[in-house]
Length: 594
Image (cartoon, rainbow, N blue to C red; front, top):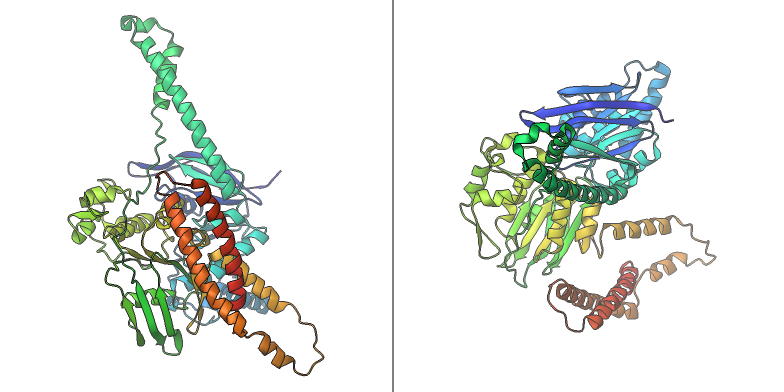
């Protein structure tokens, strides 16, 4: 039988008259790797803070196994000291034996290096948000906890570090309790999901994919049960109405059952979700061109003679290590950060909508409704649909009461939704999203993904969320540092597979060559022949034409109208997909040659 690490008994927490959860009970056992899922504002982080002792419950008990070592990584770590990185991490061990001290220092340096923290003498106060998160994570790991509690561990981490943490948690025997919206992370790490829904918790013994299936079954069962309850209630109401003067003589159990049915019939299964029904404004054929763009900060090169022509309806993802210049790149495009040389030529019809990583620039002392009203008193979307600011905000789950809140009281998820509303209310046709997934819950992320896939405009998204990138982008800019940008024709998973194949190919030892002209032959083999150069140019045109034809067919299929020759068009669509796979693979092979 698994050892109990933690028991939560009849836990209740509320703020004012708002109940987050009531009388919840569950256990955490050795070997559990649990992900907590809920909509923003329903108590995920609060539950972790209660367990970690950062907050107190209204009622209930939290019981740890005696002697259990617990590590807690907060969503936004607070340091409060002017220690160096190394001093902060070494503070974990207060009573370390002198002979073990150097081994511990070496282990600390190695772990920090794996987390891409190499300046161990830097002061904590000088670190970026991502660096600080990694240092805090290192300290938690170094404390060798039996139970590790993580609140949004992937926020502000680049994809490489996320994958390192994913692998460490998968291999480690540590028991895990975490809140995260990263769906790949949940799928690959967890073996149990706890969902907070309607002030209760529901436990699923499986990963995120298993949870999705079982949750749907639970909702369908609840809907069926509710229908039965309402049907029975109608019959019992007739019974209760007959001979009211004789009610006292009726069977008490049946009267009690009636009121129980009445209470159960009030269950609300309605899902309140964000409504993203804003269409883009018209965008012309000329989007933007980058001509000879260069940018550096001191010795750090961001762009070096960068040239690119952006296409209509293009959906681009940008990835790269933290600090390589992803946010700077998109700020330069909008003129927020000037280029050192070169020019951006932006089309006249382009209307940018920018969701920045830094969040909204509203006055924290203003109310939500005032912040939107200051932008526009009358919001016109989709060409002719008019909303008042109050009406528009309800589509982003701000009730009339929520709209009177001061901005400084909003949760991270509420601020993210307000930021999104302020961007979309202008009906942009070119969306630029810088880390949009950090503070949005899983349900809202899914809705945003659906919206972006059907968005009739252009999109650039900087994100560490691999699931998000896989769902919406056509190709990637991989920023490798020193001004190097590689354009990869595919989504993140496809890029990851390609990069791994390249790594393995590089590591494969080459057979010895007897000939003395080996270097010359290797150089020649890496160059395109004239024939290959012509093939490469033809492939580029063919891929563009096939991609356009594929998009045209998808638009026809998604139009909802009667499609002529649906069988023929469907067959052609499958043929195009097969051709694209074949031609893109050959294009990649040739593109590796000089």
